[in-house]
Length: 566
Image (cartoon, rainbow, N blue to C red):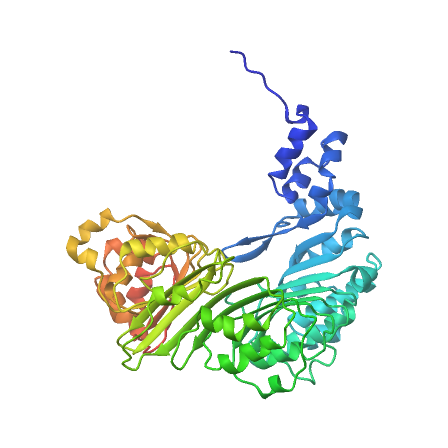
């Protein structure tokens, strides 16, 4: 048989299109633009030029694809000027924002996403020609960003129409460098200016580069005098508490039809009784990762104002008096008040105090209450904790796009949850090795894991020897960067520190000193040395700095912090 070699440029247009569509647009343009006129005609197709993403996500956060001058210059000098009229959407990391936006005019640009907006990146963008010294001194972090945008609008290389008239969708993905009121004030300054700079926004997204950098808004009339818009239709935002959610819905966005809001906490509010109905709202999502005792006084009354809702998403943890939130209560309190609702997704974790009750509902009892949810798959399971005298029920629609799951026990039914970053395990029964294998497969992008369990593993006891650990499969945690093992049996410390059981890179470990000392045999054990060398921060509870020298030898890459007694 004879073999022939076909050059890439000899392939038919249809085959070239298929190949290019399997690549990302950034690589297609960078590698193929300028090869010849025929290839240029293909890569100039709107498939590759309308949406340009110069950012990628990694374990450490969002990073720029324009990481060297050669790549940046090729895009700014050769690629973007040739396709400038085809670009509709740009995703930029802060360090390259000015270069890309100044490279050429983009008359059809309507969507802009900006990542890693912080003080350092804005200082990189700022020049004396664009930014006055007073701004340099007085304004911090995110306010720098909008000031810079305003001056970019005045730059002779940019038309202010890009921001004033063209941009309809804006996404800000920011880093948090400040805490407390300073952060709230600077974020308020952004929102006070954003609708002045971008006067025709229809979609606004405020997000964070990591679940650890949650930027919340605390509304105050004196700080948010300009926080209103007659054009905004969609808003995706994180706010501090339920009152701020009500503030968004007080009429300042008169045409808003889609709102996705994530809360730090939910408490009852007198404001909810005085606000008007919300007939324009069609899609609404509310989520909170912390429990609330005021569900009945907040969520149903708010939803009753949204009688034209077509899509609803709830992700909540609730403390109830006597009964779980089940299908019957969701129908009575929510669904029956929304005649136009055609899509309802939820993840609701509810707790009750059992108070020595006898006829407590089982998983099967709860599942039966969702029998009328015919167009949606609902998964429910119930746990009862004898020590705390509590019962817990988790019900959720599946497949799930929720960002929070709730406490996970041995009753966890499995599944795939690609949006979950924070995982918390708790049970009054032991977690075996296979359970952790299931957890990793169900939450493949898990970044933070905390465990509370004081029961020893049974299967290890049956094996009876540390040498039998070789029978366990190695579990890899590629994205894990925070691990909390403070209130656990020693077996779960071995579960992660034995290199034959777990594999990870560059994590922060929170742990009790005495437990760590036992498992590592006084910081001499070889079986745990490999994984201990992969820890870059060690939060130790119940230890003092007199242990510092030999700890640093066993944890050579770790910054060691002494936290006192947990």
